[in-house]
Length: 186
Image (tube, rainbow, N blue to C red; front, side):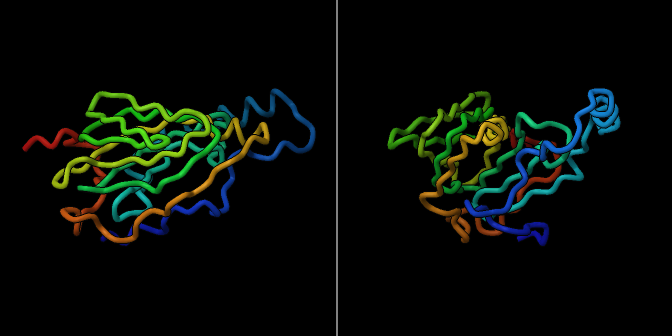
């Protein structure tokens, strides 16, 4: 397993979802600050965390100072991998980049393939699964969690934590840091 993996997901992680609103607000100062921020972030500089079944690569979060209203990250599920089982108030959209898998939402199974969009509705207990025991699967995730937190509507609950061992068939799998070969072409 890669030494880049720093920690596993858990619901008690200290996070900064919304920057503090403090002091005098000046539109010109805020516009100058925003214009000084990078408009392009290099994915190669943002490493995957977690594993060995579900990996996360967070591209845009409020702590970055670029945005306060949405969160964008990449999920990669190793062969046979699955995420933690959890629920939260905010919605999320999973655009499936490659692979095949399914979701369990409030006890109901929903299958997906590359090119599909899986929607996690508000207050839904859910879990994500890779159906293949041989190939990984990826999803680009867009969520409005920061806006919900800003409105003091936070609720996130972990029902089952991420598994700390590889799934059968996923032993030795490392998340694909290079943004190539998403469709597993040889």
